Length: 178
Image 1 (tube, rainbow, N blue to C red):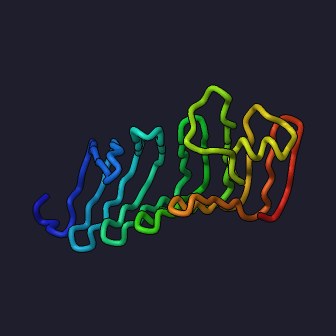
Image 2 (spheres, rainbow, N blue to C red):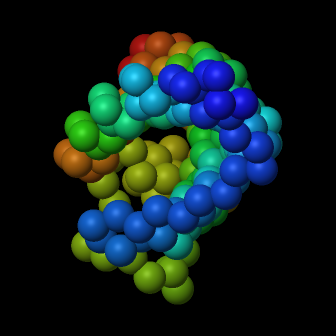
């Protein structure tokens, strides 16, 4: 419809993006609307994001503000990175700051590195599933962490669970505010 000059309606969306570090990300969505004046893309329906670095995300709704460099979803999200998974009610990503905020009923399932898994880390850091498992007295099996919020600062290599945090591995459980 050419009468809507400031709005481009899209269906059957597919796309491929390659970032500066050569990670290729493929995107699919059922529908979308791109607002040409604000450079905002609203996606809906079966949104799937898959990257060559092992990251995958499933969303039902997302808003991408290309000028601000933000991605938000006001509906439940699931993000996987290799064998680890995060589910939350909403998501806010600030691409320029390399931060992500998972909000509402956060459930993270983290799998400790096994001895035969390659890693670039010299030793586990706080927040790693391996480090959490060691703190809980167990070396194997997934660590499930629930919280109200998860703040991820990819640039600093830090993540913080906030609000009613509970970590479980097997029969072991730890609770804290953060």
